[in-house]
Length: 228
Ligand code: MN3
Image (spheres, rainbow, N blue to C red):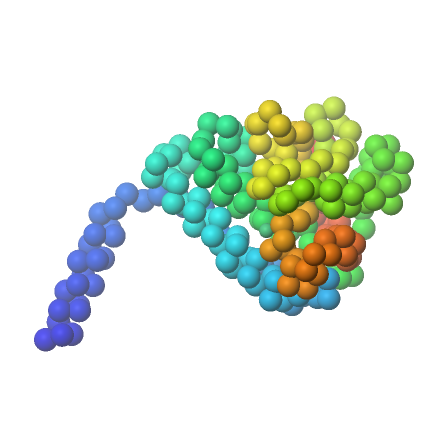
């Protein structure tokens, strides 16, 4: 009897699910490497919690905003960033969080597997900063100086120059907001405490310094070519 009741309940749930409108939901991308692949710079536990729980929550919360904001269902994650000013702050925070973390996993690679800046990218870096090392120093300073939670970015601006900028919370350089220095993001670093606290506690500069070993220059090269 109980089994029959359970089957009937399952059938009702399935029927109800089939009757609901189909939303185009945002999806949490898998990590492109094993959680332990970025050690020792970033430990496996931090990677698992950061990806599965933090990034997962941004995706779930963004999907939770679709019903109240129907245009979300028709926008790509990329397109959303450029018109974020149309939406409430929950979409800004969670839509930004989803975009920012999706790029973050992709601009990292296991130590020794990230390649090098292409001649074209290196030439642009030299033109804007003087040297690769000078760019890295300026980027690291922006990352260390971001008060509270946020991100540091290497961007390509509309005039073709490269620049370093930083954003608060889950904002990013694609967002159409007055306080944002806009440009095509080539490289973004998460400096929220959840990104490093287990291993580094309050030592954010140590995390930033170790993180350079993980940069996936192959991905940065691709973004630079696409933005040019
Ligand atoms: Mn994060």
